[in-house]
Length: 323
Image (cartoon, rainbow, N blue to C red):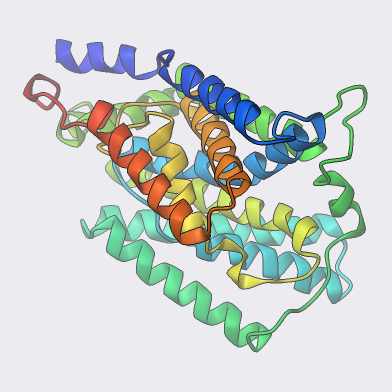
């Protein structure tokens, strides 16, 4: 028990490795790619990071609970299509956003409930859910572009837009505020502590009367909601409903969590690490594009980075933390 409590106290910490990674990648890009450190480029990277960061933030909650969510890309695509399609049909933005987020939350809750209720592998459950969501959206749209983005959303997600006196896009501010709220909840609320306890050792969590169903369902539901929110915001970029917009996030959402130092074994990590991992990954992806590497080469490099990170601090928990 003492080992468990010690692990809980250390799980919220964030070492300097992630900050060093962010600084190192930026310095390499500034030295080797023309225009990499220009303010316009930095602002564009911040906007791209916000889309990924919001989705990865939800995935982090699932990972902390000891699961994995492969339905994130499908829910991003569904959120994108729902926002554009309902807007094109004349709905105002508040009910569009509420309906989209409610749908993402409900699908995520189903993932969590099925996973915890029948002890089903999260990987299989979320893949099945992604297939169902994808099929439903394609039937709804006849596999074609549809709808339109709300007028205000293009400005909200534009890298050239300012947030009051702040020279950064509103979507970036929204992401950072969400991250701050989530980090506070993990550190200072009972829900956050229960999430960590369950992720560290589910058996001990049950002895401490932490409900597996509630924790797992809540984590997956939040992941679904944030994935749908990311898809909604991406509508400002796509301009219309595009289900495939979520496809790149299958790999990058997991990569952002891992690069940030959050253990895929559960119970170790936080939202701050996810934010730093998202920034580092966005910087690295931009750097690879600056080197004119194709998508295949980019995937190979990012895969190598993840292997290096997992080998460094993604190892199996020591026995003392598991009993």
